[in-house]
Image (tube, rainbow, N blue to C red; front, side, top):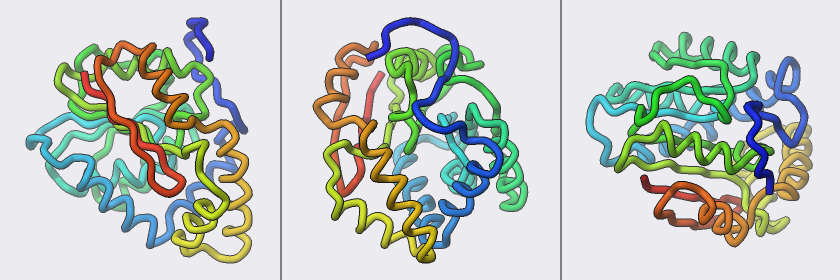
Length: 224
């Protein structure tokens, strides 16, 4: 586990810029996945008051942030280290006719005041952070007291059958399915198991958390 404090958001994988980022945006933008993002946006924000401040960390192409903004109830901000993703997500939001403040920045040194957000969400990215303790500390800092941070990612305990089922549900073409399956199998090797994330949470500033799994997924809800 990395304990050195460095103000850089380094990733344990290829840089998500240019053609790689654009390929990922296409793969994650199928109709079935957009429907899933719409459902997730509704579920994740359940119970939040109108006007709440929502932050998505590492939004990629921005689909979840856009679906959250479609609810027309919240102020949505998103922060990504990839300039290409910020450009793609901003264009997607414009096309969707919604207002999302997509920013380029580092999760290890977020450009926000302390106690700024009521809900923080990070999907499919936390396993890539080489400074997970710093990321959790920053998430805790910018989260308001009483707020929730939700981290959704792969579980290291996911099986090959879980990966097969996940890709099948994406409704991709044959080539994209093959590439996505191979990518998920690689990503699983650096994902956290529930026990590993439990240890990480215990070292964080968060006083309480809940960890659940389903299919390939791991969900961690941390309360401030």
